Amino acid sequence: MEQQALELKKIFNGVIDSFGLNHARVYYTLLSSEVKTAKQLIETTNVNQATTYAVLRELLKWELIKHSNTNPTSYFIDNPMKTFEQQVKRKEKIINTKRKQLENLIASDTDETEKYIIKIGKGQQTKLVNVLTKKEIKYKGELIKIKESLDKMLKEAPEKEKRYAFAYYK
Image (cartoon, rainbow, N blue to C red; front, side, top):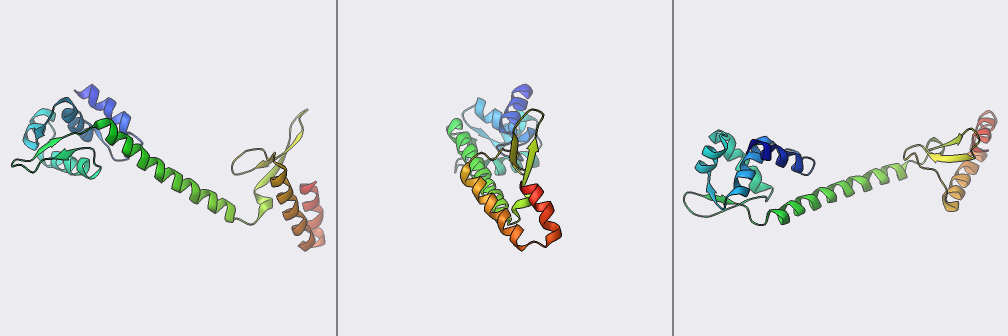
């Protein structure tokens, strides 16, 4: 059982951040049987009572397992693939939200000259590269936007800074 619990922990790693080895032991035991009480889980997994109940509460909170309204309470897994896919979708939603937050943060930065660098390679063409994403700027619309931003900065910059900015822009 220990090897399967370790594999299960690896599978859930990154999907549920705090899914540990004890979670995997209890979850695997429930995967291997239809229904178990907490007492049976404690005996089967060799996880102490307090930890087993804490793990069961977390597994219920994450909606990975269900429980009966009987006395003693029984625990079981209903459709493990569906519940796993729901957890993956929740994680994807969090990642997409954070990605959008990062994109908005990057887009809100108005100092365009700090975002781009010109790279000249041996025998290669000159490239304009976004410093944050490390991607080459190829699209005419983006290049025009950058040029307009630099033109505006050149108009407003003192004479001493214009020479540097022009060399950077050229």
